[in-house]
Every structure is written in C-alpha cells, then in structure tokens.
Amino acid sequence: MRLARGYRGLLPLLPLILLSCAAQRTPTTLRGTDEQKLADVDAELAALRPVLRGYPPRVSSKEQRQQVTAQWKETEAALNELAGADPQDPKIQWRLGELYRFGHNLDIPQAGAACIRHLERAIALRPDYVDAYLELGIFYTDAGPQWAQLGEANLKKAIKLSAPTPLPRGWRALAFAYYYQGRFSDSAAAADKYLSLVPDDSDLQQMKLLAQQAASRGSRGLAPAGRLVIP
Image (cartoon, rainbow, N blue to C red; front, side):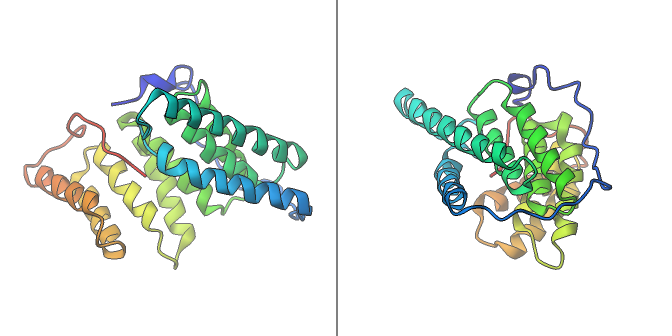
C-alpha cells in the first residue's frame, strides 16, 4: 500500500473537525478577468485529471512527466493568485485541494498536507460543500487502510448532502473505503449501489466480485495486498 511515500509528517494530523459554526459570508462576484482566469484553471484541471487522478500518474516517459509537472506548477501559481485575491472563496479552496491531491500523486513534497488543508478550509467556509467532502473522502481512501475510516466518514457526508441527487463517485470511492477496512460485504453493497447508477464500469464489476468472494469466505481484516485504483 502506498502510504509512507507521501505521509511523512502527515500522520500527526488530527481527523477532520468540521467547523459547523463557521461564519458565513456573502460570496463576492469575480471580476471579468478573474472569471477568465478561473475558466483557464478549470481547463488546466480537466487536462491534468486523466493523468494525475490516480497513483502512479499515467505518464509514459520522463519527458511527459516533466511536462505534466510544469503544467501542474503553472496551475498552482494561477490558483494561488486567485486565492490571494479572495482567500474566502470556498470554490477556489476546493480547486486547490484537488490540485494538491494531483500533486500528491505526482510526488510533490507536502502536497498531501496542502490538499487536506485547503479542503478543510473549503468546508469551514461552506459546511454543506459536497464536492469538498467528496474530494477529501477520495484522498483519505486513496491513502490506504490506515486512513480508510476518514475516507468513509467524508464520503458518507458527501452522499448525504447530495441527496436526493445521486453521487456515483461517492459510492464508487466508498466501495474502496470499505474494502480497505476489510468490510467486504459493505464494499460489495456500495459497489452494487454505484453499478446501479453506472452499470458499464467493468473495473467496479470486478472489484464487486472480489469483495463478494472475500465476504463469502468470511474474510476480515485488511484487504489483500495490492492497491486498487480510485478515480
């Protein structure tokens, strides 16, 4: 399991404490130039997502990795500029959280801690922020068994807040959070819920089968060795 790589210095962090009484603010309206910058950032995140959403990154050469790293740094600079102009905007904090999750997968030093910091900030500013809970839940689940309970808690919160709108990615990641805890029956049930929404996902079909097989054997404890990919 990939945990020690990006978590040196991260283990002392306390579990997420929601600031449910955080002061609310009236969102500011972005200026035209900032709206364009945000649109540009979203385009950059969309380009990085297929490459960096999982570990290891989907790069085929040293040159491509260098290009992706340069693109990541440009996006970081643009987002930090926007955050500097409006540090109270939860949408920018959420985008920074996703970017640093990508950076963690790219082995950027301290990116994991930055991911948590910005997503917690987004939630403090907007306690019902579904996307921030979802991103944080995926990050913790992706870290492996030691963090799967935190992943589960945040994913359940995202799913609850999104109701009655379905949240397929939440159920997909929750299947992994349960799997990493050795809760194979729960994992299969979450995978089944996801597949009722996205029936053609062959990877999750296979994952559900693995969980069902483990549950039928009465398996408990940690999941079998090997890391399962989360989007």
